[in-house]
Image 1 (spheres, rainbow, N blue to C red):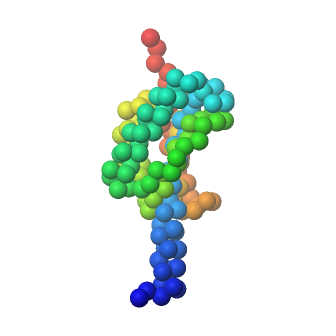
Image 2: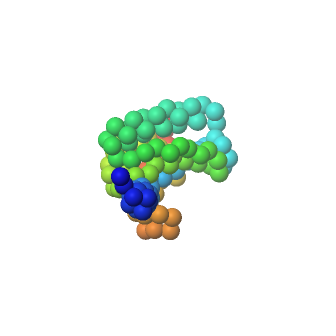
Image 3: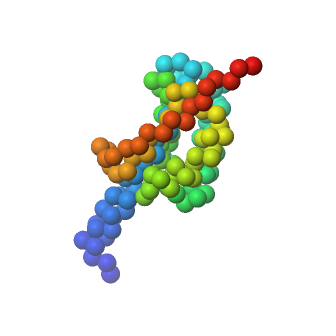
Length: 125
């Protein structure tokens, strides 16, 4: 039987590995909550991101937040780079709006971060 100390050690190690984050900030059409049609489209994108992330075994999707002009997706796992590799093709295909970006965080809050611009210029019709 595993000792309490050993189980606690394992739990802390798992938590430490899972502190890596991939945060996707998708710019909305206004500085608040965006338009309902645009949010519907972003919920579909969110589903695609979840499938890519979890299908690759690269991390766990933790939800979204809408407000302040962004539709934000939260993902956590043992490698920010692996999470990015898993979801980048989905995000690139989506033609994210100008001002959208990704933060790769390489540890818990306050750890080193890398910012990746993913927004593309608006298309002319």
